[in-house]
Image (cartoon, rainbow, N blue to C red):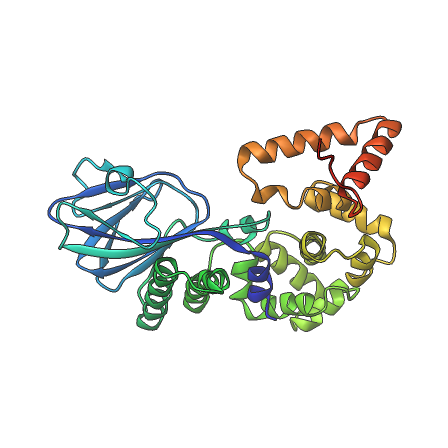
Length: 349
């Protein structure tokens, strides 16, 4: 896969929500801060989009699409001088594919989608996107509208395989926005996404992603970029924000985190597959990048999918269990094995 596909494969969308809004007359709706990505397509009419922290509002016309990847509060309005109403006034409950109407509707109709991501990888991508991704190119707008409309249909008419369809649609919408930015030529920013728009830096990054286990040297990567070693090292640091070998290590650890969370492979196998002959060297690098040891990461891999209260409770239980005396841990393990044994049956009394 190419680097963009590699990173997107680690971002597993969840918590989908789609719906539409139909506004009429003079209107202004305020939306709060959000996690993940919100995306909208204006089907008919026009409206203004104002995002907190962005000095200039954007006029959206029929056919325009936009993504809001940074979670900032925003306002949609026919007139930005109006006092906005809270979005819960228009959408008192989750739409789940439905349409919310305001002032009788008829003047501006749009559809929107929302999804978040599992894991800790989202910041790598979303942190480099601007507060507003405004899609104007006809081919990109058509793909976005189709994706949103298809996601709404999946929510309205649930069918087998709907979760997988929604996941792919979420990826498609994100890819369309990122392709647009890459095609327009990203300049002036720092990060791996900006580097993909540079032919020489992209060649080096592609090489690292193609074979992350290879013992890449600065000289080898410079040759892939057709540059001298010193010039390559300087440009890579200026473009990506870290050295080539720092980038390689971070990418390896993100791959390792995904394997720990989803594969069940032993740490030694994961370490070897990423170019580490020593499990201890791998563990040291993992803790430096990910903030915890591979075993701690593996134990906590399912907590992000729990509600906040359950997640805190689970972490507290894990903390208590981890600090129990060995004798108590052994007794707990024995009791658990007895309880879960297929031969064990509860008393009928």
